[in-house]
Image (cartoon, rainbow, N blue to C red; front, side, top):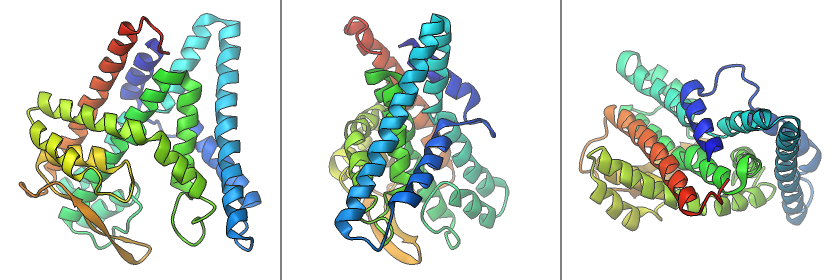
Length: 318
């Protein structure tokens, strides 16, 4: 558990410094390189699906094995070197501080600058079109992004770090990166990216639901509407095109007494997302800060819970 605790505090301290040689960037470069060799839109749907599966296996397996080899090599040389490398690599799979930094930029632009600059800041962290969004929709998009990424960027990697150590956590990030790069339901990636998208759904199934629980607990301690959070998770957790993203978003929506979902525009086409939560309070800039606060509290609660579970199990977890 010292790896998780060390990695978590290093993430809170450093975030994602500009220019840092982040492993996820290397994973992304590997995906781009392999995609050029494996994706052929002229071939059959089955061929595209098979090649997408091959891409996933190569990227995930190589990420796991390289990470495992590095850590084993470090421990072979020196125990302290092994622990230090594990903490550093473990820190790179967590995105607590960077998620705060990037979403807080949107809040600050809304607070002190123009709405055009807020739209630009938002465009760096969401896939939807932002050029015509008004303040309310900018806030909604930011809150949804934080809610979903509390699971994908914080709790899920923590869970896999606890279960299988840094190699498994890094393999999870490889799956997550694959989904973000090729897991789109468009003409180019519909078949090629299907395998990685389905695998991403599978590995996020438990973390997303755990995240909702941690957000509810955080809402209780932060004197938010934790009962509303519970009710919204139960009633609206499935109101999402993703089998997982709706649960943490529902927990946030209920806690803040706001409504998420609605019409978004992707590649020039309007897409309706089922609504999550009830509009008991109007969306406002402060909801971004409130959601960031819930993220920090839920991540800290997760570390405490995972550490307590490790003690109960007699140190069996990583």
